[in-house]
Length: 178
Image 1 (cartoon, one colour):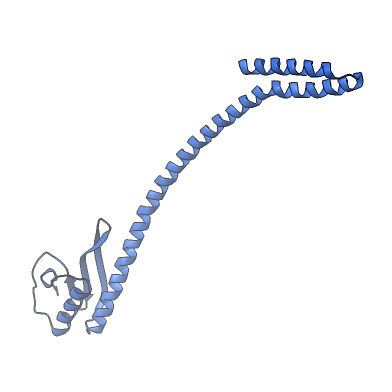
Image 2 (cartoon, helix red, strand yellow):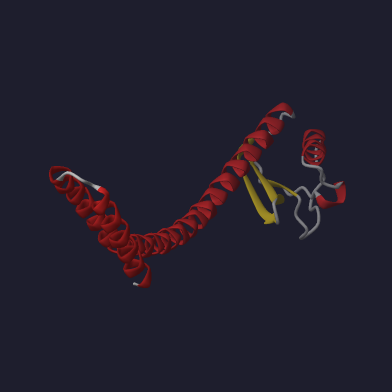
Protein backbone atom coordinates (compact mmCIF):
# COMPACT_ATOMS: atom_id res chain seq x y z
CA UNK A 1 0.00 0.00 0.00
CA UNK A 2 2.90 2.36 0.76
CA UNK A 3 4.35 1.66 -2.64
CA UNK A 4 1.07 2.66 -4.32
CA UNK A 5 0.84 5.95 -2.42
CA UNK A 6 4.52 6.70 -3.11
CA UNK A 7 4.02 6.05 -6.85
CA UNK A 8 0.93 8.29 -6.98
CA UNK A 9 2.73 11.14 -5.18
CA UNK A 10 5.80 10.95 -7.42
CA UNK A 11 3.66 10.77 -10.55
CA UNK A 12 1.52 13.74 -9.44
CA UNK A 13 4.59 15.88 -8.73
CA UNK A 14 6.25 15.00 -12.05
CA UNK A 15 3.08 15.61 -14.07
CA UNK A 16 2.44 18.96 -12.32
CA UNK A 17 5.94 20.14 -13.21
CA UNK A 18 5.62 18.97 -16.82
CA UNK A 19 2.14 20.50 -17.14
CA UNK A 20 3.57 23.89 -16.17
CA UNK A 21 6.14 23.62 -18.95
CA UNK A 22 3.44 23.26 -21.64
CA UNK A 23 2.61 26.69 -23.05
CA UNK A 24 -0.41 26.06 -25.30
CA UNK A 25 -3.73 25.20 -23.65
CA UNK A 26 -4.81 22.65 -26.33
CA UNK A 27 -1.67 20.57 -25.68
CA UNK A 28 -2.38 20.64 -21.95
CA UNK A 29 -5.66 18.73 -22.58
CA UNK A 30 -3.84 15.92 -24.42
CA UNK A 31 -1.15 15.81 -21.79
CA UNK A 32 -3.74 15.64 -19.00
CA UNK A 33 -5.60 12.82 -20.84
CA UNK A 34 -2.44 10.67 -21.12
CA UNK A 35 -1.46 11.43 -17.54
CA UNK A 36 -4.95 10.25 -16.47
CA UNK A 37 -4.44 6.97 -18.35
CA UNK A 38 -1.09 6.44 -16.68
CA UNK A 39 -2.63 7.22 -13.27
CA UNK A 40 -5.31 4.57 -13.89
CA UNK A 41 -2.57 2.03 -14.68
CA UNK A 42 -0.69 2.97 -11.50
CA UNK A 43 -3.84 2.46 -9.39
CA UNK A 44 -4.82 -0.83 -11.13
CA UNK A 45 -1.36 -2.40 -10.72
CA UNK A 46 -1.93 -3.59 -7.09
CA UNK A 47 -5.27 -5.10 -8.10
CA UNK A 48 -3.57 -7.02 -10.90
CA UNK A 49 -0.90 -8.23 -8.45
CA UNK A 50 -3.66 -9.41 -6.10
CA UNK A 51 -5.21 -11.52 -8.86
CA UNK A 52 -1.78 -12.90 -9.76
CA UNK A 53 -1.47 -14.02 -6.13
CA UNK A 54 -4.80 -15.82 -6.56
CA UNK A 55 -3.38 -17.46 -9.68
CA UNK A 56 -0.43 -18.68 -7.60
CA UNK A 57 -2.89 -20.07 -5.05
CA UNK A 58 -4.75 -21.72 -7.92
CA UNK A 59 -1.46 -23.17 -9.23
CA UNK A 60 -0.61 -24.54 -5.76
CA UNK A 61 -4.07 -26.11 -5.57
CA UNK A 62 -3.59 -27.64 -9.02
CA UNK A 63 -0.21 -29.06 -7.97
CA UNK A 64 -1.85 -30.76 -4.98
CA UNK A 65 -4.61 -32.13 -7.18
CA UNK A 66 -2.06 -33.40 -9.71
CA UNK A 67 0.05 -35.00 -6.96
CA UNK A 68 -2.99 -36.82 -5.53
CA UNK A 69 -3.94 -37.98 -9.03
CA UNK A 70 -0.34 -39.14 -9.51
CA UNK A 71 -0.49 -41.14 -6.26
CA UNK A 72 -3.73 -42.76 -7.43
CA UNK A 73 -2.15 -43.54 -10.79
CA UNK A 74 0.90 -45.08 -9.09
CA UNK A 75 -1.29 -47.33 -6.95
CA UNK A 76 -3.29 -48.37 -10.04
CA UNK A 77 -0.01 -49.01 -11.85
CA UNK A 78 1.24 -51.18 -8.97
CA UNK A 79 -1.99 -53.22 -9.16
CA UNK A 80 -1.61 -53.53 -12.92
CA UNK A 81 2.05 -54.43 -12.42
CA UNK A 82 1.00 -57.26 -10.09
CA UNK A 83 -1.50 -58.53 -12.66
CA UNK A 84 1.09 -58.17 -15.41
CA UNK A 85 3.62 -60.10 -13.31
CA UNK A 86 1.10 -62.93 -12.84
CA UNK A 87 0.42 -62.93 -16.57
CA UNK A 88 4.13 -63.06 -17.44
CA UNK A 89 4.70 -65.91 -14.95
CA UNK A 90 1.77 -67.81 -16.46
CA UNK A 91 3.19 -67.31 -19.95
CA UNK A 92 6.62 -68.53 -18.81
CA UNK A 93 5.05 -71.64 -17.28
CA UNK A 94 3.19 -72.34 -20.52
CA UNK A 95 6.42 -71.97 -22.54
CA UNK A 96 8.22 -74.39 -20.21
CA UNK A 97 5.30 -76.83 -20.54
CA UNK A 98 5.56 -76.65 -24.33
CA UNK A 99 9.33 -77.18 -24.19
CA UNK A 100 8.96 -80.24 -21.93
CA UNK A 101 6.30 -81.69 -24.25
CA UNK A 102 8.68 -81.21 -27.17
CA UNK A 103 11.47 -82.92 -25.17
CA UNK A 104 9.16 -85.83 -24.36
CA UNK A 105 8.18 -86.19 -28.00
CA UNK A 106 11.84 -86.07 -29.02
CA UNK A 107 12.65 -88.82 -26.47
CA UNK A 108 9.65 -90.97 -27.55
CA UNK A 109 7.89 -90.57 -24.20
CA UNK A 110 4.14 -90.40 -24.72
CA UNK A 111 2.55 -87.66 -22.64
CA UNK A 112 -1.00 -86.33 -22.31
CA UNK A 113 -0.01 -83.05 -20.70
CA UNK A 114 2.58 -81.13 -18.71
CA UNK A 115 2.06 -79.02 -15.60
CA UNK A 116 4.72 -76.56 -14.45
CA UNK A 117 4.70 -74.80 -11.07
CA UNK A 118 7.06 -71.92 -10.34
CA UNK A 119 7.79 -69.42 -7.60
CA UNK A 120 9.43 -66.02 -7.70
CA UNK A 121 12.58 -65.27 -5.77
CA UNK A 122 13.14 -61.53 -6.05
CA UNK A 123 13.35 -60.85 -9.76
CA UNK A 124 14.03 -64.51 -10.64
CA UNK A 125 11.57 -67.23 -11.54
CA UNK A 126 12.36 -70.61 -9.99
CA UNK A 127 10.87 -73.91 -11.15
CA UNK A 128 9.17 -75.72 -8.27
CA UNK A 129 7.88 -78.77 -10.14
CA UNK A 130 7.41 -80.18 -13.59
CA UNK A 131 4.86 -82.99 -13.96
CA UNK A 132 4.64 -84.95 -17.21
CA UNK A 133 1.46 -87.04 -17.51
CA UNK A 134 2.07 -90.25 -19.44
CA UNK A 135 -0.34 -92.99 -20.39
CA UNK A 136 1.06 -95.22 -17.67
CA UNK A 137 1.18 -92.54 -14.98
CA UNK A 138 3.15 -89.37 -14.27
CA UNK A 139 6.80 -88.43 -14.58
CA UNK A 140 7.72 -85.75 -12.02
CA UNK A 141 10.82 -83.63 -12.37
CA UNK A 142 12.34 -81.50 -9.58
CA UNK A 143 10.34 -82.82 -6.69
CA UNK A 144 11.93 -83.01 -3.26
CA UNK A 145 9.39 -85.48 -1.91
CA UNK A 146 9.47 -89.25 -2.13
CA UNK A 147 11.78 -91.62 -3.96
CA UNK A 148 11.72 -93.34 -7.29
CA UNK A 149 9.29 -96.22 -7.13
CA UNK A 150 10.17 -98.04 -10.31
CA UNK A 151 12.99 -98.39 -12.77
CA UNK A 152 12.95 -95.89 -15.65
CA UNK A 153 13.27 -97.02 -19.22
CA UNK A 154 15.92 -95.55 -21.47
CA UNK A 155 13.65 -92.84 -22.96
CA UNK A 156 12.45 -91.63 -19.56
CA UNK A 157 16.04 -91.42 -18.29
CA UNK A 158 16.95 -89.37 -21.36
CA UNK A 159 13.94 -87.09 -20.70
CA UNK A 160 15.07 -86.58 -17.09
CA UNK A 161 18.59 -85.75 -18.28
CA UNK A 162 17.22 -83.26 -20.82
CA UNK A 163 15.05 -81.58 -18.19
CA UNK A 164 18.05 -81.31 -15.86
CA UNK A 165 20.33 -79.83 -18.49
CA UNK A 166 17.77 -77.41 -19.99
CA UNK A 167 16.60 -76.02 -16.66
CA UNK A 168 19.97 -76.24 -14.86
CA UNK A 169 18.75 -78.64 -12.19
CA UNK A 170 20.97 -81.10 -10.34
CA UNK A 171 20.35 -84.76 -11.08
CA UNK A 172 19.57 -85.52 -7.43
CA UNK A 173 16.87 -82.83 -7.52
CA UNK A 174 15.04 -84.64 -10.31
CA UNK A 175 12.95 -87.65 -9.45
CA UNK A 176 10.90 -89.61 -11.91
CA UNK A 177 7.50 -90.97 -10.96
CA UNK A 178 5.53 -93.59 -12.91
